[in-house]
Length: 220
Image (cartoon, rainbow, N blue to C red; front, side, top):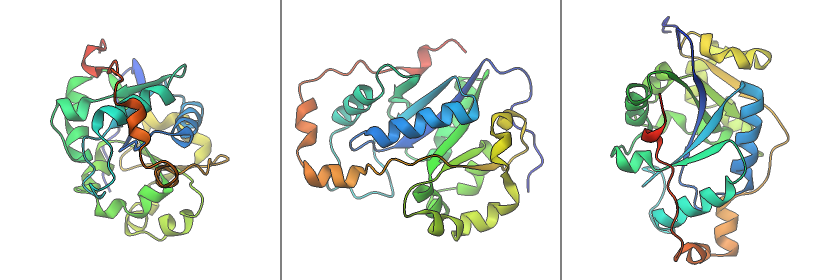
């Protein structure tokens, strides 16, 4: 495993990155993010709304503008920023995004957040080992997915990289790859079930003008 130490030097911002379709954004995203902020000592969580998730069927995917607007509504009054940066820097894969972000924000420190459902299929992500060498990863338990996550090929490869949850706030000093498993009372909300209950949910946002948070305006 790699021996490079992540985040040498003083960090001005400790940022958790939560990528996804947000189709739509829901209370589970918000609760996961707020828990991660507490457990990891983060300044903010950035929601990276994907223009198009390569692992998800395009059928049923709401327009990007509606997904951004739903995320902004769900993130209100919380230290959560909604970002369209992947659309603007034209990255489709997480590995490419994580390669560019440190160059754009050299004095920020990033940790990738994912639910256990994503860890279960992490080995299908493009250049997933590269991702693990770019940033620490925090995995948050999700109902029904823990067994698959622990049995996944990615977890088998990263098992020796697991760090104690009690040391989660020290993530900027960890050598990479590094993974921490966080547990809290999970929220059962599912975007799939929300879409099934209201297939036309995105129409509520059709006339909205989301004030897109532009990460490049932050002062590094």
